[in-house]
Every structure is written in structure tokens, then in C-alpha cells.
Length: 329
Image (cartoon, rainbow, N blue to C red; front, side, top):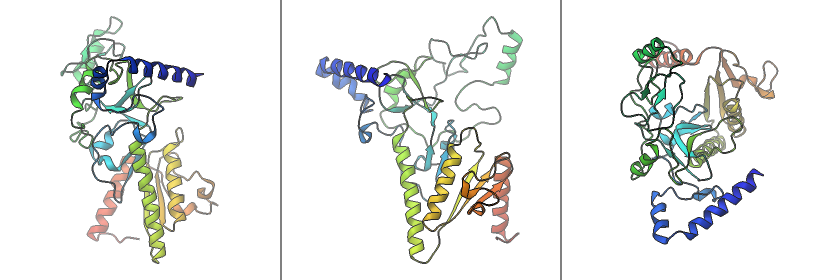
């Protein structure tokens, strides 16, 4: 039933588009985010929402986090966000494609309700509205004094000194996109209807993935598998480490992908290990990776600790090995 409704809406939009004067059609198409309709062939769906230079080498970052912090440090060509990120927006109706939000955009937030009411977007200040009558003034002042403002780049513990440095704007996109973010409720760059963050939520059938990003991830996996195969043919062995940090059992997307990659690389002859860092669920999930009887249980290195502390210890161990303080295994 939903699909039939979408088809009807699409047909109506196509008819309206054909009835518009030619000059108006050209003007509306000048945003250059290509096709507006969800049944557009994949290769024509949308252009990249940000510039991507080069390609990934020996490293790729696969994450289910939607905060886009990966772009602070990693190049756009080596990031795969399987649930999207909150810096990208999409139409909440039927228009196709995703685009990035302006870096200085932030919401006007009512600190009493923590909602963003209709009206203009936050100015270039803090974007805080007066508290609602149901909120004690003391609590509002405390919130204001702490500076805990809901805004891109303002986090609780420290500032992001390299915020989104690898997620830039495409040339010519700033002006048309900025027009859609003047309201506290962003609008679609195509139809000017409501826009939404391009992130995957539960039971979300309308989320639009960044197809080009997914394609880069798929191509990189195939390249690693091919490299492993060629090394095996030469009588050599490609060594691969899959470092998984903090992937729990509630949403197992990352855990499943880690073990899938491990299996694929092993099948091509690689000496692969999954290093699973998790204080609660550090063991393998797949039957062949289960302890103690799994046929490949030794391929999962379990670290029962928190992520940051584990990274610090791993980094220190690598530093010690490079300096000759300790011997590598």
C-alpha cells in the first residue's frame, strides 16, 4: 500500500514537472543534485554530498556511529558509515539524494523542553531560547553557565580541534543548501518540504544511504581479498588485522561485518585476526569462532576492556616494540 502511494505521488510530481515552463524547470534543476525521484537508477541517484579525493589504502574505517566524528581524522575515501551521519540531510518525502548541512548551522533549543520549536534557526551565537515556564530558572541558568549548548562541535569534555576537516562542501553547493537551513526545521533542497537527518533509525524504511560511500567500502573489501589471493599464489601470506572497538550485542551490524570480513579474508589465504575490544561481549559470535570448540576460535583475539583504555595500551605496546623496549611476538 505504501509503495502504491509512493508511485502515485511520483506520477503526480512528474506530471507537474512536465507542465511547468521550460525556464522554470531549468532554474529548479540548477541545484545540480540530480534526480528527485526514488526509483532513479542507482548510478544516477545523486552526486557525492562532499568531495572525495583518492582512495583508501591499507586502512578503512567502518562505523555504525552517526556523529560524523570520523571525518575529524580520517579521509572521506576511507570511511563507511553503515547508519549514515547527522551532518547529512535528506528529504522526508520522496525526493532523492543526500546533502550536507552548513557547518555553522545549529538549532534554537528550548532548554525547558529540549525541543527545537518552529521559527528561525539559531543565530551565530549559542542558539538558546528562553526556558519554558515549566522549567526552574535556576536550572536554566546552570545549563547556560556550563555552556552545554546543543551545537555542532561543542562537546562536553573538549573541543574538536579538527572538526569535519575531511568533510568539505562541494564547490557551488553552499548557497543553495544554506537557503534550506534558515529555519529551525530544515527544508529539502528540492521540494522545500521537511528535511530530516540522513541516519538509519529503527523500522526506518525511508532512510537514504550514501551509495557512493557503500560502493567504496565494497570495492576496498574486494581489493583486500584479491591482494590476499595474489599473495597466496606467490607463496606469501597477507596479514590482516580487524580492530573492532565497542560493538555490543544490541545492534550487531558491526560485529556481523567484522566476522564476515574475517571469513572472506581467511578464505583467500590471508593470516587474518579479529581483535574484539568489548568489556561485556569480547568473544566471537559465529559458530566457527565460538570458544572453546570453534574451528577458528583462535582467529578472534578477545580484549575484555573499554575502548579508549585499550587503544592507549595498544599504542604504548607498539611504541615500545618500535623502540626495542619489548620484543614483538
